[in-house]
Amino acid sequence: MTAVLKVVRLRPQDTPLPSYATAGSVGLDVASDMDVVIPPLGRARVRTGIAVEVQEGFEVQVRPRSGLAAKYGVTVLNAPGTIDQDFRGEVEVILVNLGEAPYEVRRGDRIAQLVVAPVARAQVVLADRLEETARGSGGFGHTG
Picture 1 (tube, rainbow, N blue to C red):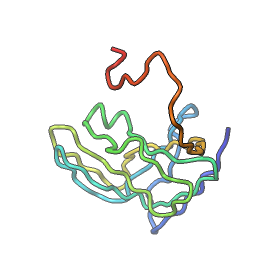
Picture 2: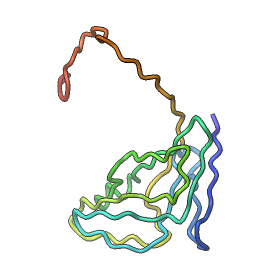
Picture 3: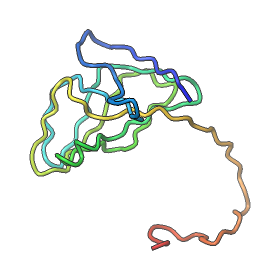
Picture 4: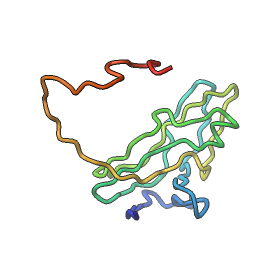
């Protein structure tokens, strides 16, 4: 399934546009459009300098880059973040530094991945009860 993702540069810049690193990549790497240092246990809203438009029936998910998480403890705070189909503002990534040292983000660094995914709209129906299941109302940790 192919979706169209339109990208607009919001400022004149030379940071790379979102792109797939390999032919088998699911996520498009997205780069920072600013320099910022994130202290240990700190967070930052990192601008990308782009706005996107995805066709109806899709969303854009903002996900962490595994290398940043494994090497430095830096991840996307609200992962996965969602860019709704009707949002037209600048894409920003909320990065959190769970590592022990300050992490420097430089303009042009790949900071996250954008994954385009289909979505379904739900029809909310008020009910008197829900169907019974083997699990029932067992919550966190219920299955071991």
